[in-house]
Length: 278
Image 1 (cartoon, rainbow, N blue to C red):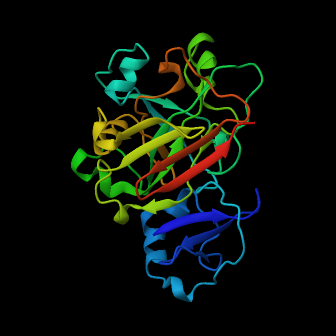
Image 2: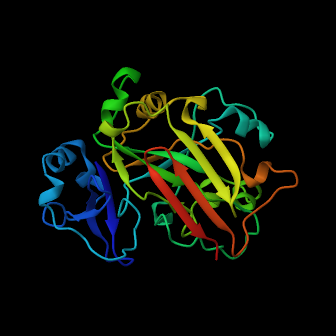
């Protein structure tokens, strides 16, 4: 299934994409998407619905973030070797885990606001993993069975806040609008191999990032198993799994976002994001 949230900001309704690419309303079956409503058991009930029997949504609709909120928004640093190299960083020997504040979650077509106090705002296309079951001390072999689905994430980053202001990376990763997710939450049954996806990001029509998830240093199953050895993942948690090379910080000279820039992100099977910078 391809699940989404549509409607004005703060008034989104849950929906499903049918075989013809049209939005079908799910309001009679689920209140919203996030937390327990994206648990695998809850999604199994939606799988049994016939999209043709759901109300068809007409007219042009704003597409919101595919999750209304998340218990936790985790991310992985330096998980593509070429990206670590372009930023002059060592390759980690274990996954480098950090947090993004859940208040940064934004829609896949909403403009990205430039925050006051930073002039080094960067882009990072990433495969997002949404957890669908309580996950603690799981093996690599069973890890993917705990996934509800996948989505596109842009891990927007204020590099000066991240690198020059002390403390942990969360400060540079969490401003409002720094976490566009969606357009869809694509359930795990439609993504049999999360390491076989193509990612690309263009800036003003110029391709900046192009890679495959097979290039990850630590694959999705390893990340889930590894993280679950330290903490309990919950349904609705998001894990952004790292970005490939091509970020603004790695350009020579560095190129950061400015007002009026247009970003377009795509991951095979997961849809696209497109928005301006304001």
